[in-house]
Length: 314
Image 1 (spheres, helix red, strand yellow):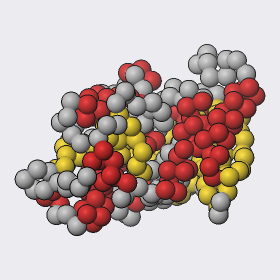
Image 2 (tube, one colour; image 1 turned 60 degrees about the vertical axis):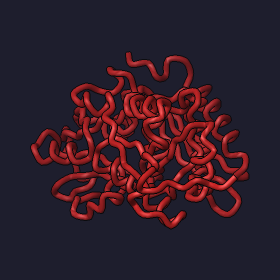
Image 3 (cartoon, helix red, strand yellow; image 1 turned 30 degrees about the vertical axis):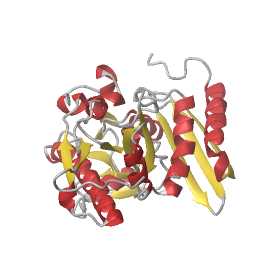
């Protein structure tokens, strides 16, 4: 069957959140599809969908329902046929998609490290005792408390620009952002210190863009295959299997990173108590094709070592 390509008269609808970073990711997806099929940008429409997570920014995610709050309305639009594909930051994605939807396309992964942001350009080690740091990430909160229990951590919800404004307003002396977001938005003027993964393991799938489609949409499957990055997919297969086996959510401090070297996949994983008082870590390596099983095995090992009650809030 001949592939029917989109045209300006019958465009392909790309769903996304409306933040500058989400739009940049949607534009990158459009550019890659446009180049792969020699299509004008007018053959694609960017459809901005406001999610519950975007509307409620004054409460922690754990209080309002978790990561799915950034995807639910977008996925509903796709199931209803209002959009053809959706572009997501994979670190924000639940490990399970609604029936009828799947993610099997990933763009090349950006820098997966965390960035420490202080307007004076200082680093994490330069923070005075008792300094205030803002973050909405339970993982970063736990990792920071594990390393610097003297610090005061405050909630810092909102998109990248909102968090930078809060920093400028003096709500906190420093915060964390993803290097990937800063790079994608070309925000070279923001003072940052990249935190090496040996010092602070990132969120599972940090730096990766995933594209969701309807499972029965063979046209989209064929088009997206042209822009899929295989190595990113191999890395995320291990990381997301690890996360799924841990029953990971925004209420659980989990970090994980898979890296490739030749035909070998190296996987590191960490779970932490929510107050940072304890951490359990493991590393493993094996053939790339065994990545998902490596993730599941590592998760089982860490859960057994952590023991009952490890993630309890009290």
